[in-house]
Image: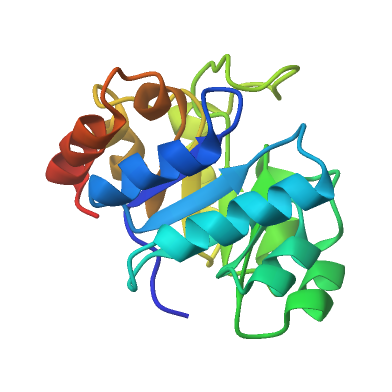
Length: 203
């Protein structure tokens, strides 16, 4: 697999239309985008992902949250799974060996288990308090993140409450990439905010 970029943007439908958000991200230089729409029907999500793929630059990768079937049908780069979603082994059986499978974890035990699976990266969080997710898991913190990064071999994608002001601490803790939602999508100018992120940490 091509290494993940430092910056991992998540398009969340609770902020705005995923297609419009994705276009702003691509225009801002983002090249790894996860599409997350928890309320969409299967057909609506399929249509959104297909449209986003149609406007994506050739070097961009699009990940579908939760739905391995939609990732397979649309030809997306892969799927991101939560702890309550389809097991990673089942998702891998659906999308095959060459696409990306990522898995969210929220503590050391989950991260160690994920490290044994056929997944391409392990997401760890929330690193800081976050309001993006209802009933969020307990905060991992920088020390917890650093311990996980030292303990596992797969690339770690840190998520949860990460902002321009604290991202350097997150990377110093050992995270390979950072996934950003609110700090990016709540901006008045998502494209410009994307450029700020990429200038600071790279793409």
